[in-house]
Length: 311
Image 1 (tube, rainbow, N blue to C red):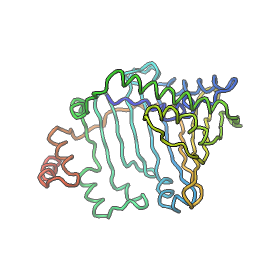
Image 2 (tube, one colour):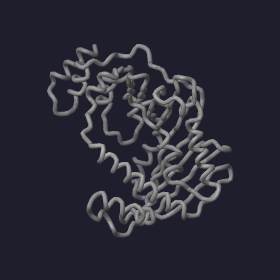
Image 3 (tube, rainbow, N blue to C red):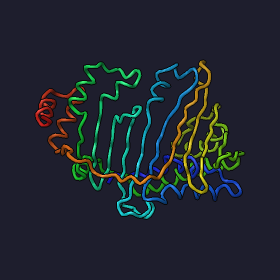
Image 4 (tube, rainbow, N blue to C red):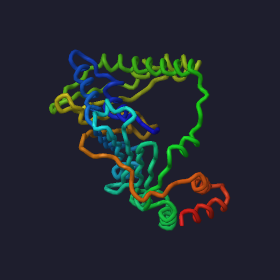
């Protein structure tokens, strides 16, 4: 059902799509990408950073230092992930320090959700009063909810996109990747002391490569002005095994100087199965409507219904 290919968010995104291809290097990176799914288990931790006067001193930077995101996969067949298509459980965690704010598990055909709203209090500038956090925790927090696959599928929108349009979209994506890769290939890379590679280049070179394809898709000139700034990408390896990836984008922020946004990923393969939690509250269609009814602008009837169903 909700089987995500998290590998493209890690080294696959940094290495496979942005290639660092040079004599001998492409082979190493291909091995690194392959290593991500060579085990029955995969754990990836993402952390983000922001620096520069434009980040505002501040709450963005302070919040990012407290946040991390875990993406995990576990084969249910005992085989490697690459050999377990359709037999993989996955999990996403949003962490505030050592505390999980949100935990999502995709096990079998069902989705399980856990929220601990008290973790929000540790994020600077969250903008919620203690009373509001207490209400959130009382309504949704501290318990697991189970959403059956059949219920989820009934709410998923059906696609009306034609096969021809889908093929065109895929071709466009492939062309953009090819264009970006050609730029990366032509840029000098550095071999890291402990294994892996890094590279720095200009955002203008990337924009110049992909704009023709984007203009063709949109039927208009999207942007043909100067594109200041730079990128830095990196892949860390232990032998032929990927251990992490990173990307940083530095660009001017108006008159406030430069600002840098970064994303780092660390990769491990510990034996850690992902299973359905016990004692989860089953979400029925009526309960889901009640939960959705609590968004702003809805009637208090839905709220009352939800309160009754959760009690």
